[in-house]
Amino acid sequence: MDGSHPWLLWFTLVALLAVSAFFSGSETGMMSLNRYRLRHQRKRSAGARRAAKLLAVPDRLIGLILIGNNAVNIFAAIIANMLAIIYVGEAAAPWVATASLTIAVLVFSEVTPKTIAAQNPEWFAFKASHILKPLLKLVWPLVWMVNKLTNGLIKLLGFDPSASRDDGLDTEELRSVVDISGHKISDSHQGMLKGILDLENVTVEDIMIPRNEILGLDIEEDIETLMGKMLKTEYTRLPLFDGDINNIIGIFHMRKANHLVRLDQVTHNAIKRFSDEPYFIPESTTLTTQLLNFKKTRHRLAMVVDEYGEVMGLVTLEDILEEIVGDFTTNTADEVEEVVAQDNGSYLIDGAATIREINKATEWSLPTDGPKTLNGLALEQLESIPDGNVSFRVNNYRCETIELNGKMIRKIRVTPMQSAEEDKE
Image (cartoon, rainbow, N blue to C red; front, side, top):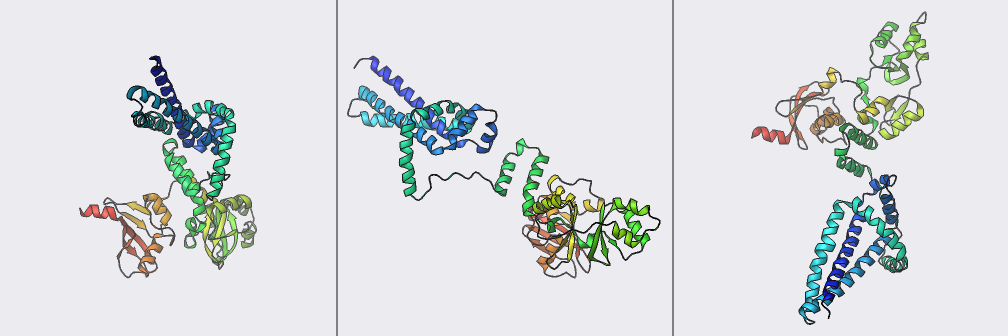
């Protein structure tokens, strides 16, 4: 054999290993592409558009890559065997060629290009699409035949080869995406996105103003008292009821107070006349549904009722929007004092504070699927109103009652168990 032949064989073998590396990297790069980012990049990148078209029919793409990769590797095995015969003879050639080629393919044609493609999928896939797209047209008959055979085998195994991949994400998966992208999204925007995702899992009962905290107008009170409440209130709308909060007869908007003061004589009937019709919703309504209902009905305040028609509380459009964007206004002093951090790592919390607000303020995970307030959670654990201060545990939080009255627990000190253990140490 001519002395120049080994050099030609070596050149051919190196070229084949390079082509094999291209196919291996293309497979990993194409399959590692972020489908959602790819949809966005198609608007401004020709490479993204080519890659998207190739991925639209994945069995064709995989068939093309594997046909090319296997063909190249087979030819490389033949060349490697010819080189081994030249250097070690026919007897040892198969063993030497197999061992040497396996190491070379693994290092140079598999692990290295696939690692690069996995770390830089867009760079690799977009460049590879320049070659893969025309190559698919060139060897289309062979790819078609291979796909027919493999699809038939897939059907025999009980799978549907025509089934498309579901790239849709549920709420928790979307939340994970937001968390992963946190370094690219500002904290405020990240919080808003999470707030929107939470709307479907939160009901109006979770955020409503409870009935015992509702500030309203009792039509049975005298005119002077009613006008005094209208002038002093900080709210734009007040429920109008007849003797009892369950007898809601209207919603009075404070801008209507200007009409009242222009009258020669303010009467109870005038107040009723200037009130809007009340809007009632069930306590189980999700915030997503209620947000759409507010938009549809043009209401901004709704009375929340239970299955028996009893008023449980009220919720406003602002309350729902605050779940997304946070508080619109600065909290009052009373609200600030609902959750007060202590120097020892514990928190002194008002019994009327809602579990969701406590979790937000402290980043805890107190259970939200039962009672809505800390007082309700404590009474559920104790199963009665205690006569004196007691301690109890809720999951990984130690609770100690601080202030009681005959109806409820007013103040509770809550300490995460980890903090409690650190204090002992």
